[in-house]
Image (cartoon, rainbow, N blue to C red; front, side, top):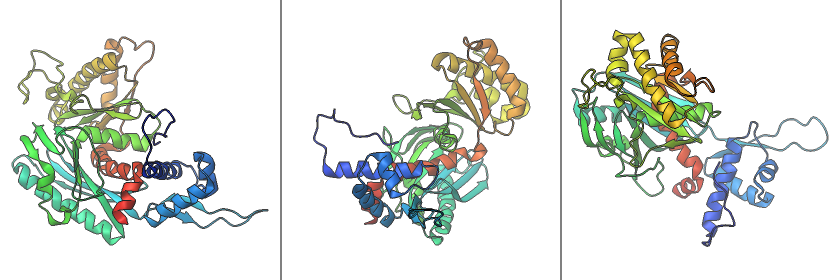
Length: 394
């Protein structure tokens, strides 16, 4: 939930800031209610006056963020109240993903439901970044046009890539929505499995005319997959998401927030050394986890891949006290075959395994977690700051 304003602040609070906070509070309250709440219920839950809630609700309805449903039939004394819900029309997020051997695009409603999902399978390594991102942009344009034909408005786009990213928002215009973060926004510093270095991904995507007006954020695919998993599960605020593709990435969620590290480059578990004198890796080191549990190595020797994963994951658990590990990407459909080997290493190597065993489970979103997480990141920005969206649509 959006943080509430407190009396401890030493700086004056502008009226516009109070309104922005209250808009987010009302929207968040409706979004997290099990049943559509009435305006009176929202007032009671938020502590705001009924008049304030009514005015804010009118603005959120006019901006296409909420709908007011007809009241249920009367069953007794009193008049039943209309319920509020997130709209299934209005703003939507466009998620884009580039993998070593596929492209994906996804459109997600404000409610989190998927409207459109497109995938193309082809090796992206020979194409180079300009051609690969142009092809992905065309796929995203198809998804956008189909969504807009249904009356949706694309609020922004986010791209998931398998590499180190200087994360953040590259705005395309005032009020545009998209995830934000530290660093020189949107630059793919290095994606070794694609052969990319210092690629301005948003600029290349905007070469497709249908995407030219969008804000486009870029993030590591494992980070976005972790955020997607967090949204659909919601119940566990502390976990490590491990994405198994040609490379291996991880997204660490602590207290319901993604941990990025000082430069936004945390989670490169694929380059944790599991066998110091082992196979050479593309990164220049030897014995990296990717060489034993990446997609190609996994196909050759599943037991060895499971053992290598267990060794690397045990180190993470000993260091960070992670209670839950989620296996995604190529690992999700193979979970039952990998589980015993991974858990054997965890029991053997985690100091606290006898006191509090680590929970290991398959990702709920499977292979589409990153592209879903990318689309969700755009929607999350709209839900966290609806005032910005209302200014854009005014």
